[in-house]
Length: 112
Length: 114
Image 1 (tube, helix red, strand yellow):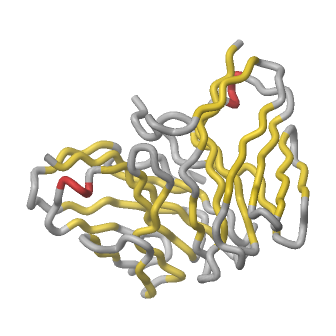
Image 2 (image 1 turned 120 degrees about the horizontal axis):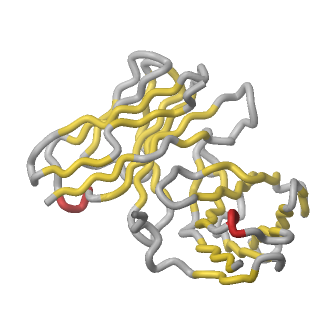
C-alpha cells in the first residue's frame, strides 16, 4: 500500500464537481512550473506546465493559473472523476539546469 | 517503449549494508535524475546527470553515489545504509527533444533500513 503522503493536505470532492488545488512557490526567479499527478504506488506523471510569461494555460479538463504577484499556482480540474483521485504536486524550475523543485503535494479524494 | 524502469520494487536493508538501486530508460533521454520521497513530503533531488559520464549533486546527495556509464542506465549506490535513508526512491528522465522540463518517472523503489 501507499504510505507516502499520510499527512498531506487533503481536498475531498464529489464526482462531477470542479476541483481547485493550490500551490505557493517561494522563488520569484522561477520561470517554469509543472503539475504532476501521483497515483498510489506509482511514480509522478506529468499533467500540464506553464511558463512564467503566461497567466493561464488549458489542457484537457485541466487549467493552470499562475499569479506571479503573490507567487501562487493553481490547478483546476473540471468535472472531477474518481480516476482523478491522487496526490498532486506542483514543481518549479530552479534557475539551475533542468532541475525541478517540488512542493509537498495535495491529496485529492473524489467520491462517487 | 518500457519507459523508465526501476529495480528492485522493495528492499529491506540492515544498518551499514550497501546496495545499488537500478534505473534504466529506453527513450534515449540524455537527462536522468534520482529523487527520494519521504512521507508527507515532496520529492527531493539526490543526484542528476546531463549525459553519459556527467553527474552532479542535487539537494540531498549525502550518503549516495551515482554513475552514468551509458545513456540508458543511472544506478544509485548506498554504501552504508542508515535509517534516515528509509524512503521511496524515484528515477526520472527527460530530453531537450520533447518538452524541455517534462520528466518521466519510474515506478519507484521502496527502501526500508532497520
